[in-house]
Length: 280
Ligand code: 13P
Ligand code: ZN
Image 1 (cartoon, protein in one colour):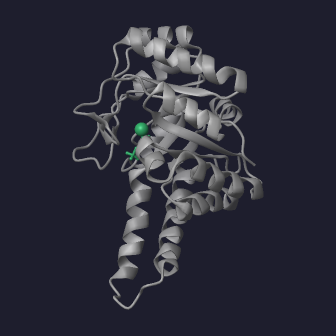
Image 2: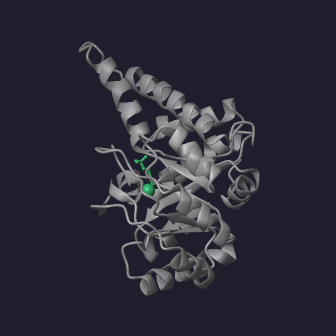
């Protein structure tokens, strides 16, 4: 069933585990992510970035996810990842997305607060939760590029929560988007400190390439949603590439099926890392 992300994330916070949030780009990824969640009886978030939205449109992603979610027994949320403007958040809300992120992390604190609050005020009457971000995730995701990870300042995070009324908070704790070129320095003590000061669930971005151990340590200290994108893109493309080495293949179903299979395995693996199997 298609649900908002509120209950699944609040339950994760109480239960000391995290829900996996998986970036999907196409039909095969939507199908396989939901199949993986069904197999492991896990709640799941499927999410699309602005560039993904540009690729196929909010309506198409909504239709695919809503259709698959309606057939699933597990709770599925459709989340706008790194919402880049108030307008895009409004469009996602209207398209039926059940969870929305506004990423104002590059803005000065005052402006990030004002923008995030505006999105919360728009989404609140519809009962749609909003994720905001404070501090910086390094690396590159869409147009969001950052040389270095910026660690969240606890006092600012408290103010951000109080003055925006957001439902979940992405925090900067040393992770980066994309493939890690050097080993990230994760500040799990900061996560623990933030856990004690905030009431909303915290989100870890840039989880591709992190060891199970590192992710579990973050969850143990208070992370409730973990975002995976690059790993799934790699899994899908590797599978497709393998099939396409045979130049006699011309049916898109032949390689789509293999990409789908690889993503399903990758999502299952990360659901187990997050410890949300059996929590549907
Ligand atoms: P990765 O691409 O590093 O997995 O990051 C995912 C993410 O944070 C999506 O918002
Ligand atoms: Zn991210």
